[in-house]
Length: 263
Image (tube, rainbow, N blue to C red; front, side, top):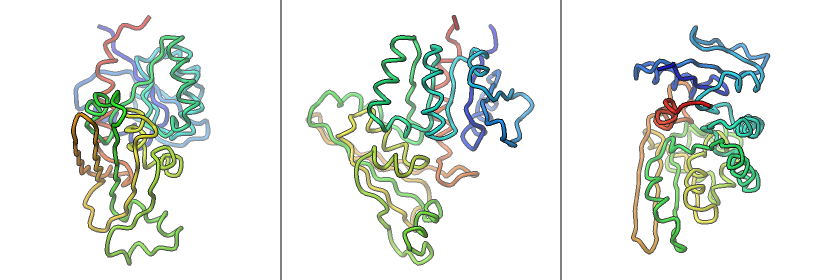
């Protein structure tokens, strides 16, 4: 069996963790990463660097993992899908624009490409998919992170992070607005909205000095019943705004794609 190829966009915390995780699984993989020409990020010896998206496509990856931010996802997703590739966007916030999301889905349908949504820091998406056809299905998502994860945002609002004695509400509103305001931090809420429906998920963001990890709380109501999910994730060592589980979720989404024959 030939060694499968994985494409990466960016080699930050998520890509590095994914690279490490796949090695720990004993997966032999050919890696190709798309990076900016001026990037000075060091790469492991088994990762090939390219600076043009067509060079990434030419590597014929079984899937491409976007892990460079919403702007990079919006810029490269059309070409990758047009080439018929499966793309796993870590920056789900790129799909907050419903028009862009619909356009990309239509493009994928024409070319055989795929947008593969992965739970990232969450679970329970199968439950949401099951109740999504019910017109009364609604979800409330609460993101609760340590103050350190939001220090810059709190300071910008004139709030002293060190003076907080209880949870501080940074945001309350729709999943799409949350993803647009905090594109690197609130992909989880938009993932729920894409699974259930953009107008049926409300989001609350808390900076909590008592939080010991990145906590995701989901409350779902529908004619089928009620459900509550709570995930307390260890922050990634290199980026406290990202959960360590995110890279594991991407790896799990990759597995069924790696052994697919490439045409």
